[in-house]
Length: 288
Image (cartoon, rainbow, N blue to C red):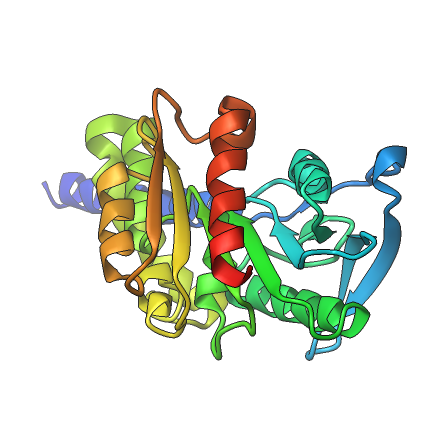
C-alpha cells in the first residue's frame, strides 16, 4: 500500500513539475524575439536608414522618411512579431498627406537587437529615442505617434510619457491579464484561464516589472492629449469592450473608431478609406 502511495505521490509531483516546465516554456515563446533581415525600403519613400541610440545604450534600426515643408512628423511603431516593414503603407499614406515619418524596429524585432520582448517596458524607450530623433531633425514640428498593438502599448507604458502632440492607438489591449486571457481562451477554450494564470505569474519574474507597471490603461493618465483609438469589432485578442473602457478613461476629446467585421488584423489594409479619413482628421484637429 505504501508503495502505491509513493508511486502516486511521485506521479503527482512529476505531473506538477512537468506542467510548470511546460508553462515556463510557453512563457518563453510569448516573449521570444522576432529578429530578421529586412529588404531595402520602397524607392518612392526616399527612406534613409538610420540607427537610434536609447538612453540605456541600446541601438534601434529605423527608416527616416523626410518630407519637404512637412505638416508634422509621425513615428510609426509596429506590433508584436512585426517590423518597420509592416508600417510602409502607413508611411506612404502619410507622405501623400504631407507628413514626414520615422518607422522603427522595436527592440527584439527586425534589425533591432534584443533578448526578449518586454511588453512595452524597453520598447517604450525605443519610442523615446525615436521622438528625440525626429525633434532633432525637424525642430519645432508637431510630433505624433501611430502605434499598432505592441507599438501602442509601448507608448502608454512609457513613464514619463513621450513628448508628443498626438497618439493613434490601433488594436491596443487594456491590461496584460486581459491580453493573455483573451489569447489563451481563444487557443485553449475552457483550459485557457488556467494557462493564463500560470503565464501571468511568470511575467514579473521574467521582466522584473509588475503587471500594473506594464498596464496600458494605467498609462492613459500620464498623457494630457486627446487620443484616437482604432479597433476591429471582431478582434478577439483585444475585445471591443476593453477598448471602449480605455477610451472612456482617456482625456476628454479622445475618439474611438470601430472597423466593422475586422479582427486583429492590419486596420489600414482592412479599410483604407476609413483609416485615412479618421487618422488625417484626427491629426488635423490635433495641431492644425
